[in-house]
Length: 144
Ligand code: 5GP
Ligand code: ZN
Image (cartoon, rainbow, N blue to C red; front, side):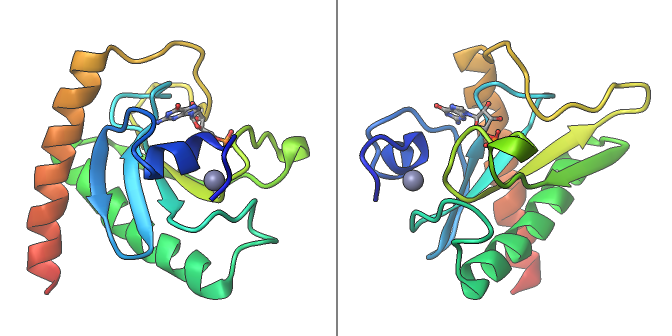
């Protein structure tokens, strides 16, 4: 864990978290600056800076959960597409240096972005997290 890392602070419950899903190795929560409603971040529970620092096992777990979350947002939000993105290094646009995957619901006609400047409304984020959490739990139950 890294003290000045916002995702480590979220994992330690020292910063607000709109939680969607959790495994032993990953936590999924809403991006508080959503590129579109339902924008999720899947983060490793251990602190890795980026794809070059993370273990193959951690990367594989994030990939597995990304698939589940992509299905979740598609089903719950009835979006037309889903962006699954991951940035490594400032040159690539990474802004939080703790390995994570973006899962972004996309709609026809919507311009695709990863970063947004406007913060989501806390009540909207809470309501969205609850919807996606319930849907992810139901899909996960189907998987078992
Ligand atoms: P990156 O640019 O590193 O690929 O993505 C980092 C993401 O973290 C950005 O989309 C940004 O909106 C999001 N972010 C920054 N600070 C916080 C925060 O405090 N909480 C949450 N949930 N997301 C954050
Ligand atoms: Zn961290």
